[in-house]
Amino acid sequence: MCYTAVNSWVKSKMKPLVLDLFAGAGGFSLGFRLAGCEIIGAIEIDKWAAETFAYNHPNSPVIQADMATITEDDLKELCKNKKPTIVLGGPPCQGYSVCRKNAGDPKDPRNNLFKELIRVGSIFEPELLIMENVPNARQCSD
Image (cartoon, rainbow, N blue to C red; front, top):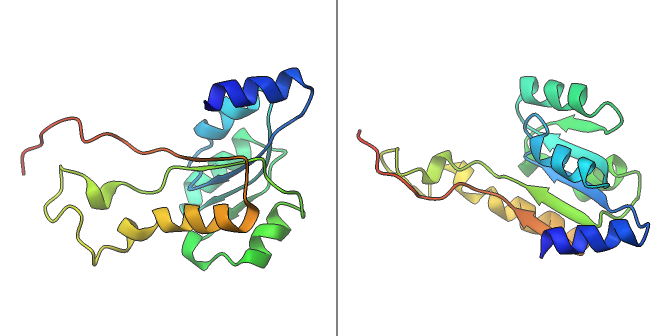
């Protein structure tokens, strides 16, 4: 679905606008940029990752902050009042990892950060909202 949508936008000469949340160093954004999208902004809590994102995407503004503290006004300012066509993100998965004791602990604040992606989606109502996470694919020992 996602590839088909982006491909049809690119063929129609529409340049999809992407907002990347929990952006890390910008790998997810890189794929979309290479597909013909414009990265209009990113948010990343980790200082080094945010600096790496800025290096990898010099034409895209990045805010180094906790996603849970970002207001609707902050988002609109980051996007320069452009409406993202795509909002994407990979919220932290450490709190759910099967490699961790107490996986899924409701007291772990990371376990609720996926709601921030949904909140931003409800603000901008993009054509695509994409959340990336890792599968529960292997067993771990404590």
